[in-house]
Image (cartoon, rainbow, N blue to C red; front, top):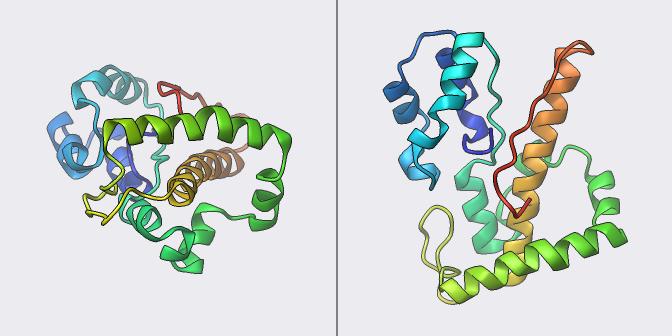
Amino acid sequence: LEAVQRRFQPVLDAYTRGELSEAELESQTDWRVRWFWPFEVYLPVFRTCKELKIPLLALNVDSEDLGRVEAAGLPGIDRSTLQTYIPDAKAFAQSVRTAAFRSYEKSIIRTSYDMHKEMGILRTTITGQMLEEDMPYRNFLSGRLLWDSCMGSRAAEWVKQSGNDSLLVGLVGGSFH
């Protein structure tokens, strides 16, 4: 679930076990601070997963780390934290050198950056830190790559740990990943 940051996995687990109400789920995931879409839009997914005992996976990067990257680039977070998001640095480095990546970067990430620039929102990080000037494209790109890598590596790790008989169902609602 992209809407929930990885640090809140225990909260999702408690909810699907029936230990938390919907109000507690919203509160304990810091939903109103950490996600910009209304909680109510996601309630059918939460309710269905709880009813059917389907695990929910917190996929998103922690906003504190994303904010550091938006302000200072990947060097803004320490190496051990970065490795939790990008577990295979060599494969990651190879992937960003491909023609497919360059096409994705140009058509998706650059387009998103330009849209953010037009909206005048590149002077604020995800955590609300004010920047003296627009976030450089390099930091924006690094933030998006951290976000995408976090979601991909969390999903891959879940599949690996869950075994061959598990099914990972993804819901894609955005256009920038």
